[in-house]
Length: 306
Image 1 (spheres, rainbow, N blue to C red):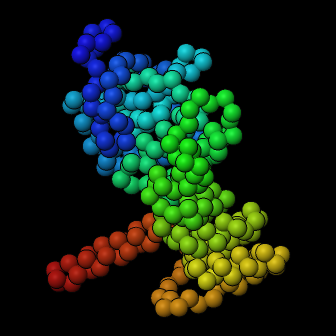
Image 2: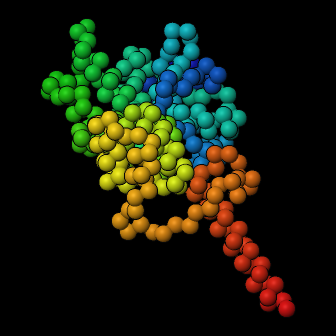
Image 3: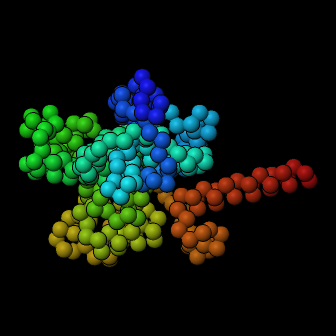
């Protein structure tokens, strides 16, 4: 049916973004007035999926409006639609279709987390910080006495952690473990996201002091190896006893793991000139192997030409 300014109402919204069908009017808002959500825990990546989204936006525009809330300064804050906004910028759009909703800060946090958890690929760090944000928002809502209504789950006297766990479809222990990951140094958390450090040892490592985590990071870089569950648990126990020194960490990291595959190591100084500072070890390894394959191919061609 027609709405303000002759714009049609949206009757259905893409389930991919976790947004229910609505009769709310869609407004056209300049992109430069729309801000990202503060401390947004979900990354916007320039990957194949983003490239496909940009092509779609260029062809048919943004089919699913962003959900935003008004700010006191006349600007808007994204609740759902960070990837769409980014794709629109790459596609050259400067006006975006939006549904504007009045929300409190905590209501916005909960809606933002719920919408983004519908993504197909979610990194451990994204789950960790989003679960933590939602849990804290629910706790603050539960502490308020001026609310005229509360959600059904609060009415049933469920704890905030129960609500987060049930909404996410996981156990409360899993929620607790994910939130522990927010205690890791960013560099270690990146290793969890990349899969180099597995989830279970990461949870144990999150109990280490910041200085101990820094020493562990140095050991990981020097040994080009990450701790197993047993090694991480051992470090946690040494830390609790106040005995986890850099030397102890190095000793634990040098222990041979069960079924450990023998590794060939090369001093970084010999190859550092060929790679930019901070290049991941896996990327360096892949480049070296590719170079050796190319060299081998050329040698075979040379032999065949004789």
